Length: 419
Ligand SMILES: NC(=O)c1ccc[n+]([C@@H]2O[C@H](COP(=O)([O-])OP(=O)(O)OC[C@H]3O[C@@H](n4cnc5c(N)ncnc54)[C@H](O)[C@@H]3O)[C@@H](O)[C@H]2O)c1
Ligand SMILES: [Zn+2]
Image (cartoon, rainbow, N blue to C red):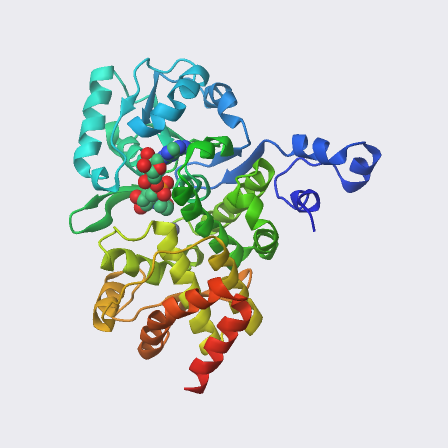
């Protein structure tokens, strides 16, 4: 399998048929040109929208935004850091935008109501009315805050997302979840508010710090594990190119991930069922983040541990076939080193997981692939097994990184089963 044939497997691509391609010379290049602007449709109760994805898509932002129809003013929202890298390109391409962007701190600690108030007041002063368009340029923090500001300013104005982190491109900019944190917890105030358009340009990832980039790769691994065996296999075969941020590899994994998120959200916008599969790795991942005060792990790294733990628990409960569990552990480990898991008392872990939104009536429910590409949710796992698995994570990872992980994870799982 190579990039070329995989690319033809993409949905929504305008690739010529195989026969047609064979008639052409240099099909690889031509094909790449044909698929370069993907348009993925997302359904929402507030109106459907498109995700346009292509390397270089930013250059088309003005035309794409103009295609949404008339507006009384376009206001760009971003963070000082993102603006330093991408401000000039955004101002060049988003024609008709107000000359001064509204910049706000995108540290997680600044994702709070007072930032939304500041944005709203700046919008009033800049003369934004009900027919204004907000353009959010940045990672998940910028998108969540700007999305919530758009949902509440004058009871709702149009918002366009231009996500600039891998997490934001494959996850947070799609699906309409917006919001801010309270001192009591993350994302506790918010709204479902669909954008009118999402413009994804993988080139903007070129300036992302490597650890942030890798953090997003764990979410892509998640998409492969839960819903896309082809994506999963691609990651197994091309992780090196992905980590090098090879343009073709990025275009493939991002397009594929967006298509999965869109498909899931299209069926379950409000997370009453299927959308829960997107939480694979998140039950434990969120608990690890909370137990370490959001300082030790980037979100994706915590999800990496979460996925490894679920794969091992699936193996122990015979819900995941041996080989599939091993492949999940191996692929996750191949993204890079994960910060170690500190000792967390079992009772504390349980308490945090019960506070998680996925817990129901005093039970912690897990999302678990039954094989790569197919996933179930609402699964209970014996508490003792959770505790034992979390305690064994460091050992599994140490083994995974020194010798072939498949054999070692197998041995570890077998040992555990025998006990
Ligand atoms: N709404 C959703 O469905 C959803 C889904 C997942 C995550 N989230 C939220 O997203 C947030 C995390 O978002 P994130 O992972 O994108 O990180 P982030 O927004 O915190 O950005 C990470 C860092 O990268 C910088 N940055 C962003 N783009 C850059 C670029 N192109 N070049 C250089 N630096 C760049 C930012 O300034 C920041 O310092 C969390 O608050 C999380 O709750 C929301
Ligand atoms: Zn996540």
